[in-house]
Image (cartoon, rainbow, N blue to C red; front, side, top):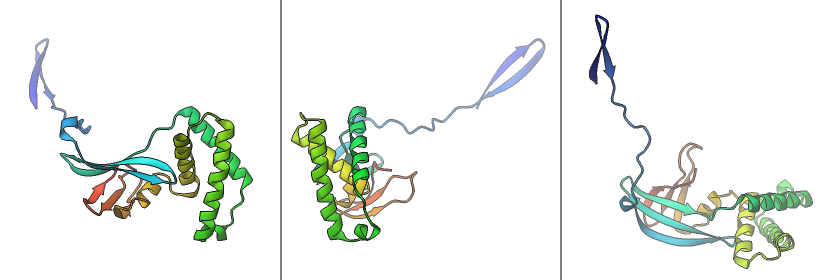
Length: 180
C-alpha cells in the first residue's frame, strides 16, 4: 500500500493505506449480455418466458415468472387455505399418478370457481396463470416445476440452497439458472 506520514508534535507516524478490492460482483452492462434463445413455457396454464443469455461469464438459463402483487398474493393465500381446509389427501393418493392428475383437475376447477367468485372481473389469461401458480405451489415443486416441464432439459441439479440450480439443456449443455 501507499504510506502517508502524519506529524504529531515532533513524532512522525507512518500510516498504511490499503487499496480495497471491491468484493461485490460488478454490474454487467446490458451490451455485455445477449439473449441467444428464448421461448415460452406453459405449465398448468401458467405461461412463463425462458431466455438463454450469453454474457462474459458464459451462458445461463433464465426463468421469468410474472410478479404477483401483495394483494393478489393475499387472495391466493386465502384460496390456498380454503382448498386445504376442504380437502383431505391420503399418502396412498400422493403416490398414484392417475389420482394426482384427477385431484389436480378437481383443484383447478374448484380454484377457478373461487377466483371467479372473489374477482368477477378477472380475465382468462390472469386466472389461468394464478391457477397454474397455485397448483405448482400446492401439488408441485414451485419454480422447479417449470424446469421439470421444460422439454428442452435433460437434467436438473439442486446442489444446495446457496447455489443456483443447474440444468442440462439439450442444445446448450450445462447452464446455471436464476433459480435458487
